Amino acid sequence: MPQAKEPTRRAFLGAAAAPALIGLPPRSAPARPNFLFILTDDQRWDSLSLMGHPCLQTPNMDRIGAEGVRFANAFVTTSLCSPSRASFLTGQYARRHGIRNNSTALPLDTVTFGTLLQAAGYDTAQIGKWHMGTMRERPGFSYSATFAGQGSYNDPDLIINGKDQKVRGYVTDLLTDYAVDWLDRRRDRPFCMHFGHKACHLPVVPAPRHANACSGTPLPVPESAKDTLEGKPEWVRRRSQGKTGVVNNPNYELNHRNYLRTLLAVDESIGRVLHLLERRRLLDNTVIVFAGDNGFFHGEHGLTNKRAMYEESLRIPYMMRYPALVKPGTVVNDMVLNIDLAPTFMDLAGVRIPERMQGKSLVPLLSGKERKLRTSFYYEYDKEAKFEDTPTMEGVRTETWKYIRYPEIHETDELYNLQNDPHEMRNVVRDPSSAAQLKLMKQELERLRSSI
Image 1 (cartoon, rainbow, N blue to C red):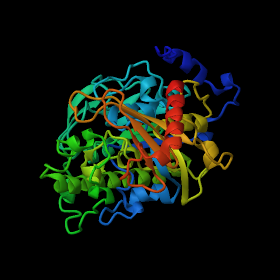
Image 2: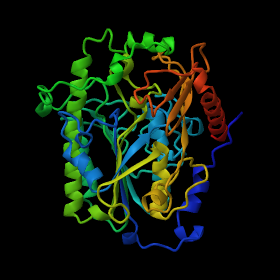
Image 3: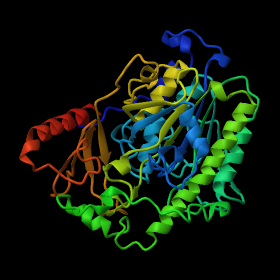
Image 4: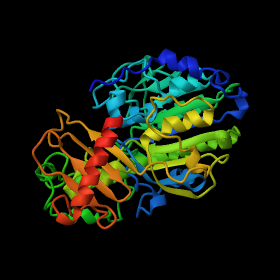
């Protein structure tokens, strides 16, 4: 079925520009919170010391969760960089916002939390990784210090407000310089910054000062590394032996360690930003959200990279600090998604949440007015030409079950009881005792799919 045409950016912005026009009392600038969204690339949910990692030390990431809320069951709706980034920005699934691979540009008239907050009077900036096309503009952000595509860890080619600039140094440190400089400016209105890091995307290159970190500690071996793949689709076996598997990858362990090492510079970056906000007495009136754009495999089911619908690929770190709403040390176990970020920002800013946003504001959940946002969510991934070992897939995850199907290949569907089999080792799609549950999951998948 053809998708309904997305309402124009101008139509949305007209409604968002003045809170008084949408039935809300006008807010003075100091009363509205600032927004800082920090996004890493490929950082999985447990790659931080707050989660008990044996060697990775991330005190500043941990601080956001310790002084705010950690979402213990946070997921992406597409485990791929560009679609997920667009979902954070728009509050929409990929099949609605249209960025379904890593080569499609985000249209300049796309309505994002940046365009809506900019129209509502916010000073906006996009720092760092964008990865949604090669255009130089950053719609909704009046200032940008960014780069094209994946960029480089060392001596990157940056684009500062649309102009090329070659800079020397390590990319995480350089981007942080631009972020701190912009945040330190004096302004008479609230701000919103989208701060995207290159780390920890492969091929990973840590900062020289972190080159030997995590060297003496054995890396954790996941339980599902023992998976025989019996009962799984044949594509999983093929992929485990290919470029995104571990079977024939001699650099697997080094890549894993360097992946962790790149996060140390990101943690230092967060520390610098928090210190600046504290010094400027802006910290407690700034909604700080830290997240990863998708998960990552470290040997689970013989896989590396992401893209699949298994837990390690879906789950992300997702934390928020905002003392006006969130008590320190809060842990939320409800399922939350990347598409929930944009409506949450709108809610907190007093801007009407567009009907086309499919995510849900987290404010009712955090304020105690609602105990559960959802009982299921839809996952989608479209096959990419450069990654032919991973097929198109879609699925549904509930709190206790997961169903995956592959509409373009004749391989087995997958059904997992997450409560009894959290590592997804036993596909029960053909188990007669699971027939009733399978029927329910298929129905739920169709319901969710038809609503997007």
